[in-house]
Image (cartoon, rainbow, N blue to C red; front, side, top):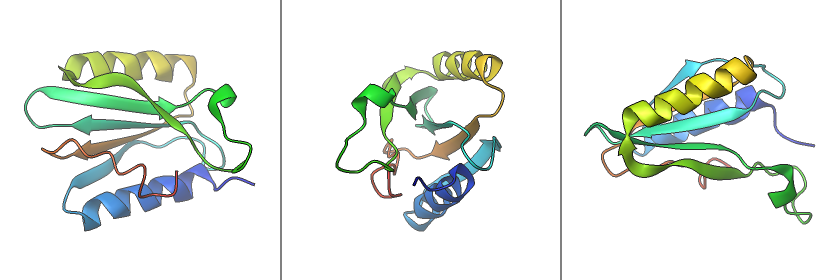
Length: 114
């Protein structure tokens, strides 16, 4: 059984804030199982974007674990991450978008139980 999306997002935001980064839920999706995207804004006009990994990359040892993949690499123009998010939201309107502002580019996904 997988943790509800809303709970995972809440934990991610809290973890980022505890570590000194600014994090906000920019778009609220389906509480139970909305896809989660994490935009990391480096505050210099660049950003990275992480999204759900394909099911084929899941680990059978941890069946409920969320996996993320890099969709837009760090150092890319922020507009590229925004364009990808717009496209994803058009395809699936029930997505969560967490935006983290951190000069070091930390995504905190490894600390939130992903």
